Length: 81
Image 1: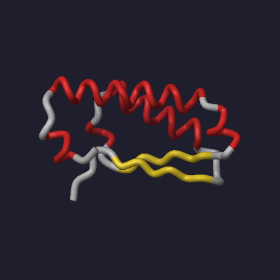
Image 2: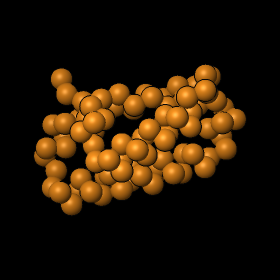
Image 3: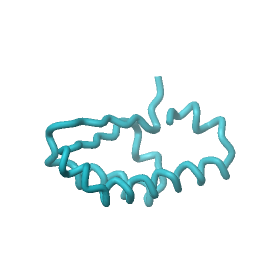
């Protein structure tokens, strides 16, 4: 989600999207395949602009997968340009 995309959304939509992010991270850290397939998640963007709860959850995802080194997923959020 880009900064521009975020600016175009209502507060209700933004809260909904952030809720999806929180749920998705919880699902990923419970998924055995992530460890089995050594999936590493990296998040690119201005994460500091996110609400603290979402930032903490993203950091949890990064920490959970930091030692995985076979498959890589890069997520872009709060980016511009």
